[in-house]
Amino acid sequence: MARAGQLRARLWAGKAPPRATKVELLEFVAGCPGADVAAATQRFGLSDTGARCKLWRLTKQRLLETIPDTYGRTKAWRLTRAGWRHLRYVEEAEECYGDPKGALVSNLTAEVACLKAENDYRKKVIEGRPGIFQEAVGLANEKLALERALATASTEIERLRVERRALLAVIAQKRGR
Image 1 (tube, one colour):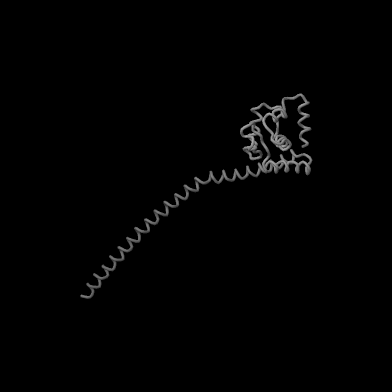
Image 2 (cartoon, rainbow, N blue to C red):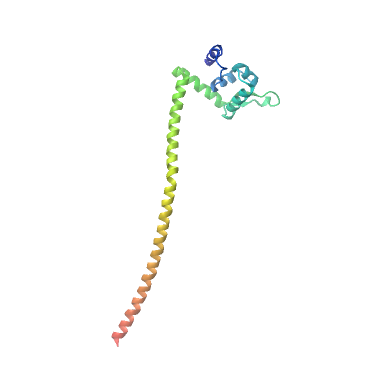
């Protein structure tokens, strides 16, 4: 909950209205049971549409869920298990490293590098596949042509063997006379 001080500092700095980060919104919802759009608007200086979009985005990420009893009235949100886990992760990073953003950024940078390497590998495999398929088709056609040639040669060899036997029989008959 150390981010509240950072938020106040940004508010008093006289800069543009502060943007509520994911973690700030999650901390706000965790501290305010049944947080709704109006409360988020007042707390972070967002427009109604902006607050709805941010809360909906967190709902799509399954970090927040709507409270079922509030469907007929103003919709309110609460943290899901994943939301609580995310907050605990941020707090642990803050305790261990002192600077959660630095730790999270380094973790995310490493994860992005890993995903990029995996994506490059898959792209290389996919781009190489048409050549592999074309080569396989060429080999299959060559095999089929060789099998046809073998069948033709086998038929011709059998025909020549029959003809040879017939000639040998004719030669044997002429010698025997």
